[in-house]
Image 1: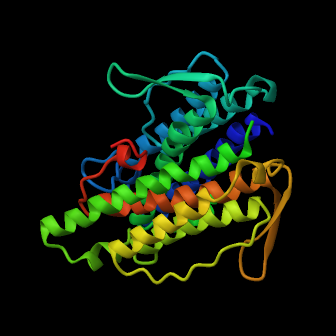
Image 2: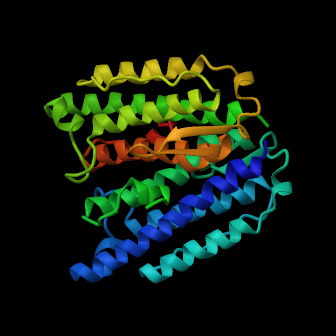
Length: 167
Length: 167
């Protein structure tokens, strides 16, 4: 089986779905006369991260995972986005970046070791497959689903089908 | 690479993490004198599913995925759980069930077709890998992360490390 299909092709549909969700969130703001900053800074609890950061982190966990799994340079992107449009651009750039990878770059990547930061002054080493299972996917989907939950909690009319990218 | 490692070994850590989250949620209820039903029926929005159902669905999407990817009989489990203890048992049974699968049952499963219900009187057919990428993982992680988000929103002191199973 293809480790490219197991990673790149899992990330891309969700990143595309997040773009669709952003479009609906922005339309919701316009229709209800809500300042975009209200939704962009919304949180499920005071010590949780706001919506915009959830999107930025979904971008980071997917793009960095692809880099680490292919021993490529790990990209670093400043979190400067302050509008729906800028978050759309961040998602689009992430999708474009992930699409630059070729299946052959992932060959054998499931068993190659990946060493990644896992806290302050701490790194963890796992096989590529375990890195995907224990770190990259759980973090990626966590932030994507939390972004969705923040919007739902604030009354944006989306559902799980939007998260699945089939709405 | 191993399609067993890419599926079974992705589901199991999160199911284990959900068990740990349930333990903390139950302890929170005791410490704060909250009736367990309050958290078990909590939702992020009135037309979203409650916490208990999020756990049941995380169980279902993982166990049924393993069955479908191995052409095994798809299990059907009634959603009868009404307490933290019963949800713990549901998770434990799901973990035990998923652990019965052997790596060889997943060999070639990434390219074999899977036909699954995708709405009222509707089915979809995808390759095993696409089924995992487009349906099983997004649904599984969605419900697991939403369960986490409901508890966070209600003040249970957990964080992403609990979701990752490393708290």
